[in-house]
Length: 576
Image (cartoon, rainbow, N blue to C red; front, side, top):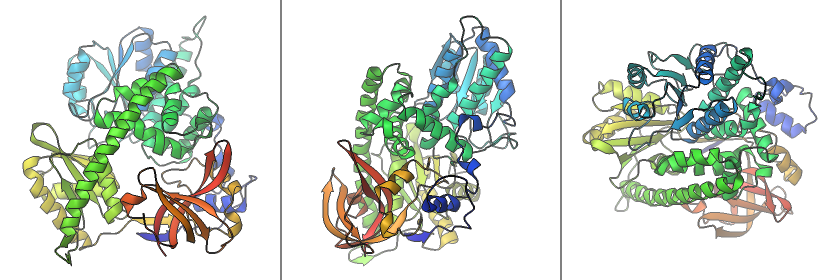
């Protein structure tokens, strides 16, 4: 692990009443004007330049006003679930009377609008299929729907291939949308904009009259916030605005019962919700449904009309998440044993491969991505983990480190092996997925290691922790912790501030099955005593850090029995 301080240019004057520290933090993240921090709904960019949105809105308006059957086709992750719930709620608020959803089970259908899924969808006799968070690569599925006389409207945010499906309309910020305010929207953000455009079209057609009121779609922004944070898309200004507006509704008790219930079962107070609460508490519980079973359980939680129903459904997601965590621990232990055996032959240490490839016939394909992430953190190199799927296939999920573009690596491997090894692959720099036949696993493993060694020798670039430097003794304060908590929303490419420091440890103990609870004092201010915690310390090898430690940490506000106090949350810990 390399630790470096974030580079910051000159601090431009920001016409806001904020502390010098926060001004410097914003400057290091490219903020030089107050408009970059304007999160009012009035600052929401118009859909101008978002390709295909007017056509999509017109087609959906035609279907809605003619009382045609609309079927939403979702995805089995949190972005897909929130997109589906948002479309369902929006269309009903706008006056649709015949709207339903279908989400593929990852173990039966895989990702996207496949011909097999279209066959299942046709049993519901839809007039229009509306895809959310998928569809941009579903050429065969769109063709199958058209052959049955079903119109397809695609809303997606993933990168397209060399050609586009022949859908009736496509809305994707990656397609013909260079004039739009952002190419970084999550699937749920794209869906929200399509619903806004649909409302404009219906308004122009005088649909809202008499007893039919025009709905305020901003009431659904908590779903947009959750899906955006869960999908780890870059938090540019538009995404920060959407997330902040959603968080404000959650804190005010004006969000959906489902999101509030997901936070509550995770032990987070919705009235103090932050982006990290969505990302590390609500999203994993929602994702558990798609990883282990049927994401419709998660979607129904988001569609619940009252808190009692939502809480009951969220409890079932909590149970699924606990099962997921147990599976993850078991698979992680097996992976650790395999890699430790590979690293040590007798008493001799053998260098590990520059890219790690793992497979076990007993593993669960819905959890391999998390195992890959854990092993990546532990061994500081890219990891691809596989589990068996149907028809003799393997499903793989990979996680990478800074400096290794995982999707490009898979593309190069596919090119070198002339497409004979990998059946399908996709993803981006830090995460990717793929499918191959079990008989090709060894060939894939050998080709991957050969390609990685040619690029990185025996040691790829390691992960990098970028910090905002050290804190002055006076900055270890509850006031700064509270200011930073609500100064975001923080997330991908607008990272939450983290700091580095050296500390004397006066108390330490393991809590919650694997977390390290500490009492520490900064060596620069030995009179200050601070509570601190390092989550999952045991699995990271931090359970015996010593009397003096170096660490990278976040300032957090600990709330207990109505009392607030400062707490350090260590993201990295080592003996000083």
